[in-house]
Image (cartoon, rainbow, N blue to C red; front, side, top):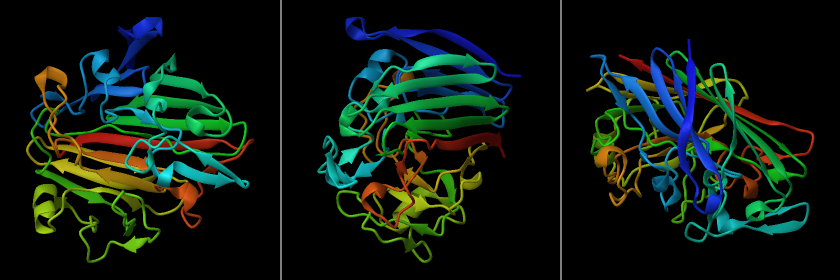
Length: 342
């Protein structure tokens, strides 16, 4: 059984609307999601002793989410990840997007899907959020109708993304939750054991745009097909952290993507998806300046993201999986976050 309750989370400035919080609860999981950016603000899972902890980085109040912050828990779009130089060409027309990450466009622009109020609808086992992204929003062509649905099933949080376009446009949607399986506010994720089911990854240039090469992970620091302890692995390979797309087996079917195990608590997160890629990010840009929930600060490497998505800059790289949505088609992808104790 899943219970769904709704409450007011806060009011936007200048009478711009009320943000609501939806609490989804099963026997194994409790998840809070707000209508601002479809943002996951809390996710409680028990450890092997039966003690529940909140595993996602974020804020207790709406103000935290309205300040400049690193997309904690939010849905990002219209196009997640980076587009080189914020530009692409469609049917002979060049589109220029806002440059908001070095020389590139990141996560939909200055006011992406994470910085808007969505319309909620309560379901028996979750909540569906919808919005219409107007033609030209953040420089993207065509009107886009979008639906993001969060449902609970035992220890599994399921996120489904659907979209329909009035004209051809790139679309790439994901959730940007930062997890720490020891509990949010824990100093780092070095004791997490990570597995990613990918035979290839995308090398990037100094601005984090894929070079175009699809490189085998074999014999590199990116071979995570067998579990590695994160802290030791970063040390061994002298890495600052991960912020890379891992290439999953191409098919629209549900498939295993990644597993993270925290030995101390026994908590396990498994990720399954229909998407062709996952961006594994280890919070390299977190700097401890944001005051989070319960007075927590979030220093570098205090959380990780597994952003299931299409490959970065796919709109400019014809040999990457197709990222264009045409009128009459439907964008439809699902990701499953399955929590358990080992």
